Length: 395
Image (cartoon, rainbow, N blue to C red; front, side, top):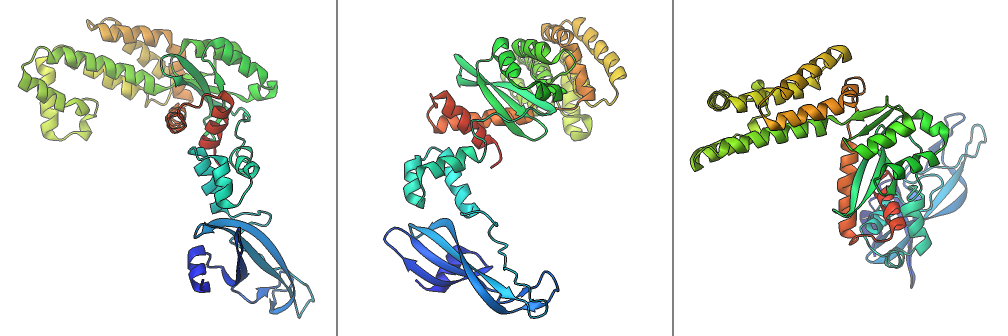
């Protein structure tokens, strides 16, 4: 094959191909830097005389289905001014790696998608142990990471409605810490107790939903001053109450008006400055016709604005007023929310001081669902944990 074609396939502008050897098992390409001079790091003199050469071997992606080995020939130059003998360095490849970054990323992504390690080893000219090591050991797959200052905790389904696991995430770093079987308080407490005391002392905030087992485990391990309720779940319950009122209103309307009301569903939760004049008038008319809809909508809007408050003391007083309004409402859905806010009052208020959400944890839950669908369930729990930590964690 022509050297220019090989260079175009490699897409490595720093180096050029000086030789190629096509063997029965692999394709060997000999490379050299295009620059024939370097600058002496001591005296800043341009060096052009080569003193010696040293080959370096790197694995790369296959070319035309042939496993490819790159032989990078590094040169040692002699400085005419200070007699220093500096080695040239490559900006494309690292100093100590024996493979290219694109090969590592390709092997890791294909293995995580379910491709067998034996097939990957044959395709890329590697050993099965190397494929496994690149995928899991280098990315700490299967080994729990250290606890951070802010952690998130949530459940994910191994089999929806039957078996669940617990996912613990470092919210600040955006990486999963560990997964463990079960979602009971005893399981979570036992896992946290297995961590060193110094790690547990670093935890200042634990973000969770309104799960009673998780709340009991957090209180037993970290005390009652660290849990923060994710505001998404609180607002979600309020939106569900608004949907219940909308369904009750639609039952009182004919088919045409019910369709018109359904079209306004996405505009009910928007603020006034996000709506045009026609939408504002339409919402006003619906609220004027149905007082229960107006009361529920105003309460939900007030709850959403409450999470934008800055200071904790006035936020407490405002939340107490919202709870009183909901408890005195004639709507059963608002009365249920009042009970929920009363039971989880302190963790909800702590959000004003510690503005953390469980969004990163919910995102990892979606990734876990994708992993399990691609792997048809992953019955082996150890392999499931390794694959989740390797897929969700940074390489």
